[in-house]
Length: 113
Length: 115
Image 1 (cartoon, rainbow over the protein chains, first blue to last red):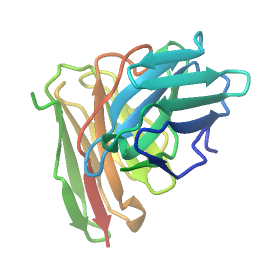
Image 2: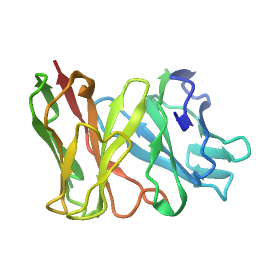
Image 3: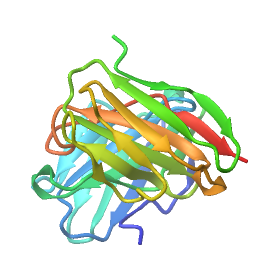
Image 4: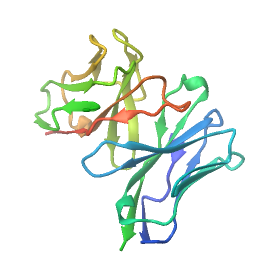
């Protein structure tokens, strides 16, 4: 039972354009969401996070939007750069940190120069 | 500044063999985790530890054992390897439970093939 879903295995975007990566979740007990970025032959690295009490969090070129009623979050990257080419994992966490991170299956983003 | 280091990076095992994966962190983190990554499955938690001398089961613990004898090390053991354990294994650590503004730091991964 996949509680965190990333339905797009891959995405290609032209350099300079906006990249939008989507993530859906089913467990209403999740209240903290994170995005991790992974390059080949490396471990995932933390990118950005959002708490359920917010609907938007921005960090430079990266913005995460949360729609709790739809149980949906998205990561926007603008403008997209070649170095953004990587696999992006959405992850969710339950209340008080007692639960562990539940990861989605990942979306491979390719930025076309 | 090494962060999280995994040993080995690659390994090929025959079915039934045993091995131990080592994870070492130099950030004085209390929490450590072992994940496996499989195509189409994302990262799944195998076992984790909330401090020296403690271990707990994650989502997919069967066929694995772990030990946390020292705060900086977290070992993952396969007693009798099976082809279903072919995967990429990631160790991670954090100073507090992940979430709540606490990120996990990951190692570079160990690619294990069981033939």
